[in-house]
Length: 394
Ligand SMILES: Cc1ncc(COP(=O)(O)O)c(C=O)c1O
Image (cartoon, rainbow, N blue to C red; front, top):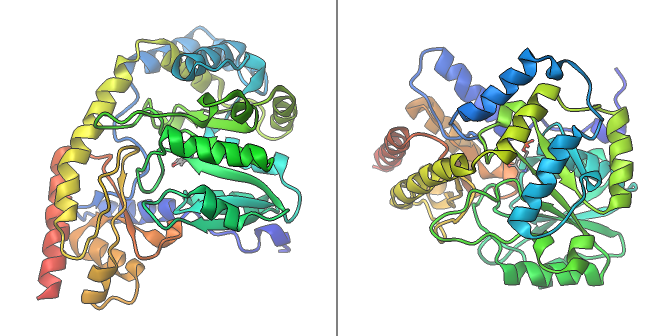
């Protein structure tokens, strides 16, 4: 079978592959604690599910919607963005997509010509690199020297006349770091100065902890807003990963083309999910706060346990998303594993604890540990990891 050049090196998502492996082990009867997951462990709040059930029962979920989403949903998103950021996007400047993942993949398809560069700070969410390649762009990986956040100097060193866009994810998967307003302002002004489009992936924006303030790139300055495409969705905030609703908000002209693109690719995302998302954005947001607090408690409990594992080096405590990203190079070397992947495979086989080797995020000496799990499982997983490392070291 002949495959197009642009897909010849396509790799499946490493995080999804690992979750599958953990699930298979669990199905075969092993006591697995899966910390490889990238989704809340809560089920979708009742009030959102009820809205979906009503939409099914009254028949409104039976039909196509406009390709860019129900007007009522785009209105609700518009209001929500305004409430959170003080920035106005008209409903026509918003398109609803099959998850933020498809929003991102579509943006790259719309903005890139073959060989155009996209700056991707390291570590990065697994799909960015493959999505840019699928759009025939060239991902330019930008490592950061300090604390997982890129600086303007680091970006400037990577800039060429082919640099078309930068993707900025805050709070960040896999590290949980959150960019400050000041850091974003510097990057935003630099991007405007060089006409480099900013793609702001704010999917974890509601999950920040211990008093951290979140600032979105769109809320800093009108010139930066006009140069930014906002990506977000309901998956992480409302425990709705399975419903597949994300969105894009951006300049009107760009969004016109974006909607036309959707009309020929996916058409509208599932209508029932759109009705659920209207409820998510319009009901009392206390449902979000309850889940946020649970994640905060878990972070505060798990962080010291992971930091205490011999050879697991953690930088500052993260302030967002639901991941820890320790450097585990010392452990891997002390235990004589050739790679972090080998260590993670042995850990899973012997203890049933699944974590994701950092290679998937461009930092092979690290591993991602998700704390989207109940406290008891997190403590048990930390104990098993500690015992595994200590026992093997002796
Ligand atoms: C950084 C980041 N962006 C985007 C997504 C996509 O989210 P979804 O497609 O569920 O909306 C994810 C999901 O894991 C993510 O971690």
